[in-house]
Length: 403
Image (cartoon, rainbow, N blue to C red; front, side):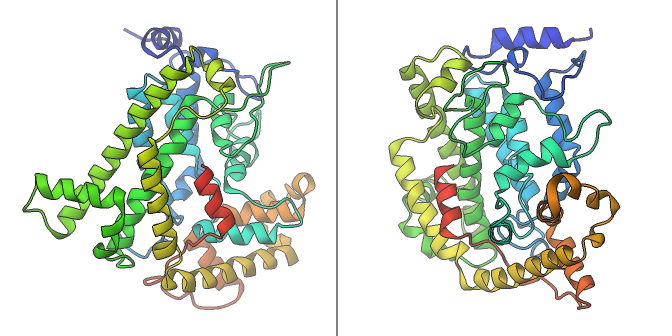
């Protein structure tokens, strides 16, 4: 038996909640394309993201630590898979469109530059008089313009609802329909991916911080989110110690947060009385959320991570070096744009020198930027064995809080 796209879309209408975004109701793509006979639009979008060059480069981009500082530390790619997994779990529990939620999660970090938020901060300053730099906007730029994989259009030509989900901090969301209304909220699937990102970095940054010995277990004792979880693990498994205890506590912390979001969001959806995806977009506030108690615990956790991990002295030292190298490479390309190569240089007519250089540098991996800096300035690249990078400015800290 061969299943068709029409059958898959019909199944969605039966199986998904009324307020879920159905594939058959998509507002389409910027560049019209024939429908696929056996895949929904969002299933095609997922494949396009996974097969993109920008997605593959996430393997060598920073999550918290410079790429190459440890075999088990997280990169943007492993973080992305973890976010996608949590996203699907929450979406499934709430009767939402898992395919749409997953592809938003898979694409959410495509725009991150090398060196994580430190790199973003540096590029934003370098582009201050030329439109600035924001990794969320860059993710959209990558899928709309930069990726070149199709002969008839630039970018990946993703569905409107996926692109909507990448506009993480937008005040308004534009409809793709002629004469369509602005809305104040994205789909529930986009809201789920956003919160799954938070759940992932809260728990896994603790894990990596402990693993890299920038955090000590005793420092976590005063954190409600951690201490209550660890206490439960000790009661359930009194013989667990050390790394095994920590690993299981991290797992339980994630599970607790996911369960809280599912319960809280379900109650908010019922209370709001939304009956369709359009109702969700017109609602006055996000419907996917933590409970008040978990939100307060996560605020405490976030403040702890910024103070003790992201602004750790070892992180600050590496940040300074990373910023200097990224700035050096950026300035070198401005002075000699021919270094970018013919294909990239051709984009200057449309995007201008600064934006073209910014696109090129932001697409680099940590490793490639380090090697390029060594090549341009004739230096031997130093090993990264004890270097870390993150520590965003307060402006970026506020962005995370709002996300």
